[in-house]
Image (tube, rainbow, N blue to C red):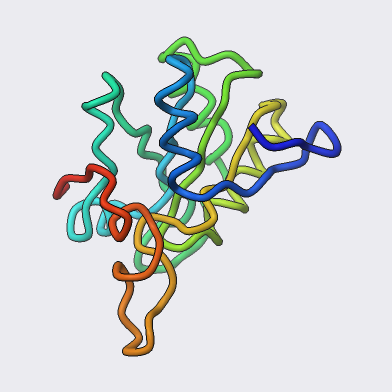
Length: 148
């Protein structure tokens, strides 16, 4: 994937590049750091066509929006259970790319060396009518997803 300047660097990839990375490397993982409410009501990436499932671990909880102090530990345990190694590609996604960047940086600091932020997120940026899901993002470009 993209070049990283140091061991804690996180690069930015668009959703198409993330999908290609997930398809090309059987050990790569998609980590969705949105809230349970978002997974349920907005939907989740469907990696079934790739023989995978998204790893769902909240970065912040709803409704108080506090960052989970055990996020890195919880995600590391999930990844270990899946047989993920510290140099496997991890693609982090949230609604629009902000929380996922923070989460990817946390995991890079925890020793994971191939963390990538999906900069467009699941829903992409706001359009002119202040709606998400029509410009860029996982859903907008037509990648598979399902209701949670």
